[in-house]
Length: 330
Image (cartoon, one colour):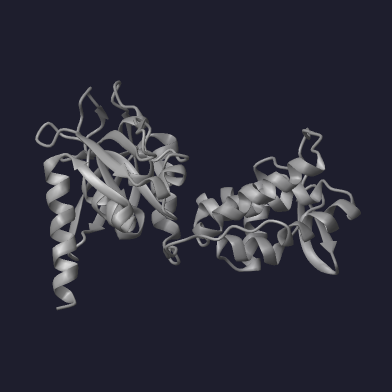
């Protein structure tokens, strides 16, 4: 039944119909299976026409109403630019949905507009830095996680930790985040896996999607903690971190030389940042962050142009990294 509904979804929005071979490839089934699914949909009351497109078998869902939305040339270009950002998620349902939206948009364009839209790929490019993660072969896992986030359903999972050890459990997935070209799930671990109206102050954890080795969306629903706000775990350029009572947030102060002050001061590195401009051109950037680890790497990237001032733990970690790097060169 789940695949049949996916076949229905693949027909929606394609006013000129869609090749059966194309649908079969998308739902990972044979054309013969797709034909059986179409027969089931017709029996369920959906009006689906059989037709040919370019001499090949196709089908078209006869939808009762169409929404005609005028879209300008610049808006089409902007949509293509946004879609290109999702290239880093190639192989995931998110990327497939964006590609499907692009196809549906193209169907509503005049021939000259379609030709121009196809050429827009040469007029905007997105270049990811730091590499991209691989999600090939994770379709079922990603579907389960997305279902959990969208439908507020508990997910049973297996997760491989940083040291390679696998643990199993249940998770109430609250939010999915894209950070440094990778997907993360932010949610509440559930030791007993029971249906839950999660209380205020419930434990929040962050999971990297590529480390899930198994995920199944259960029928059991959950209610998000009333005090959860996604902004509370987002730390700008420094990632997704959860502060705990055992490790309260740190006030960070970093001083930048005048030579890089214009660049460092022109960006928002953290939502809480404050900038103090000194008479000699230097600046001091201050913010509150839950995790010092990414701050250490960030300070080191600036070389002699940046100096950590607070907290003492940050200064000590930066100095230790510098000493270790120097020692590696004898």
